[in-house]
Amino acid sequence: MRVFYAAGASPNAYNISESNLWKNNLFDSLVEMGHEVTPFSRDVTWHFTEYPKYQTSPEELSKFLQYKSDLQASLIKEVAAEHQRKPVDLFFSYFWSEVCEPQTIEKIKSMGIKTLNWYCNGSYQFYLVAELAPHYDWCLVPEKFRLKDYEAVGAHPIYCQEAANPTIYKPYDVPVEIDVAFVGQAYGDRPGYIRHLLDQEIDVRVYGYGWHQFSPAEENGLTAAKRVIQVARKLTTRQGRQAVRSRLSQIRDKHVDNPRPESDSTVAFPAKIIGGVLSDLEMIKMYSRSKINLGFSTCGDTHQASERIMQIRLRDFEVPMSGGFYMVEYMEELEEFFEIGKEIVCYSGPEDLADKIKYYLRHDVEREAIRKAGYERCLRDHTWKQRFEKVFEQIGLSTCVASPVL
Image (cartoon, rainbow, N blue to C red; front, side):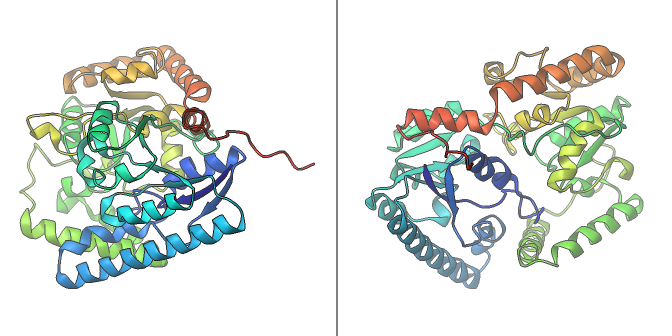
């Protein structure tokens, strides 16, 4: 099957300029299946690093709209040229309304090409894709509870849960030297959970953007040095420079609108537990380095709203696929993908989390059995290849792979 692919390298590009999360999972999996995949030549990752700035000034808005127009013109031109050279069966994208106009998708459809959009923030940001979604032939939706919302706006959703690519996410033979680790950004109710674990004298480590703000300035010299090194590395690439500019703009605006509160016992963490931002490979190795890997199910700051929104995440498959023992907040949908208590462990609230961490740190044999079972379950049932095969069958496209070269 011939696929034209248009998606950013990673949704984390604004603070990890080298991240290839979507490429590793989506693009590489399509290629490994034997499909002929042609990537869009333009740097779509720019969406993730620059588009938040367009509201900051008329100049930024004008620059963004020009970029958006140029990108769509280039997209249509490349798709048409590729389709003329050899018919394209499927246009696959990760787009939302701010970065693509409906008429662009309609133009691609008019060429006789089927269109499919992947979007994984509909749990609490459905409004970002609601205008664009109806113009695709199909939308891949990992949030089951949002299927009716897609249908309500005239879209054609297909329930497709996230997964992990086993050629990228795999166990590493490294020392198991960390009791409890979390890799991810500091937002929502996550800091509160970490504060509770520290209060319970649990040795937890956190890695990712934003955690440094919870470390007192007088303890944070090493962390600050690490951040300087990370920024310096980013400045060596164009994409990295764009990411730094975008992040500085966001930090500036946040500081003006929401000055940081004084550090106290409810928010301040020891500097030694904060490990900085990890590369993709460092993150995967961390899953093998840690006895327990944490996951959180809450979306954004919805824990402060009347409706607390939860969703299954890519992390729920990344960790066990990488051979890590995984502990995540319970939600019913998880039971469709794992046997709870035997393949992954779930918790309900900070007290339950602390109790289960203490239990599994004391029971190595039981923890190891669950870790192995989760790994085997992901290899068996939760690869992107398996997800795509089901989707392509459902939409009537061939899943046949190319013949091997002899």
